[in-house]
Length: 229
Image (cartoon, rainbow, N blue to C red; front, side):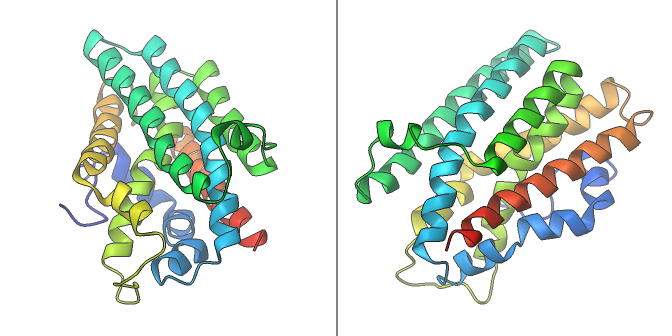
């Protein structure tokens, strides 16, 4: 397993965009929500609010990944995106397992109103995909996919992490697992490849702006949990 900051290749599009929004990226990947979760100090209402909204988020994120199948530039890319849709749908099972422990079944979770943060983030991603090409869409998607991989590795490297009896250990394990890490690495590598093939250098300013916006929306998504606690 690599370090939390070694996704993508040196000089590739992914690292260049991440470095161009270093402040926003830090605010997202090491948000107070994440730091409290790592230390085992995150209030349960904060995690509950986040997890229910993240379930609703993933429904739309799966649709955005499905749009990437439509916009895929090759059969191999389409197969990869189809597999990613299934991976996201599997990810929701963790959410439902937690929610079942609180007496919430899937119908109750789906019936929960989407928060402003959920609506603004998911519709923004879909808008970028509908109005842009495959590179625009992948840039909008990657901060979630790669960022969660980085978050998990940062937690594992955190000296303040609660090592025993962690209430949210299964959440951490999901994103630190090698299968998810492989998914995150592949997403960063795909951005690098699309940057080469789809004019990433000429479009860097606009792509970096979208990457920054996605990081900002991710930080707001964490914050809604803390605001509810």
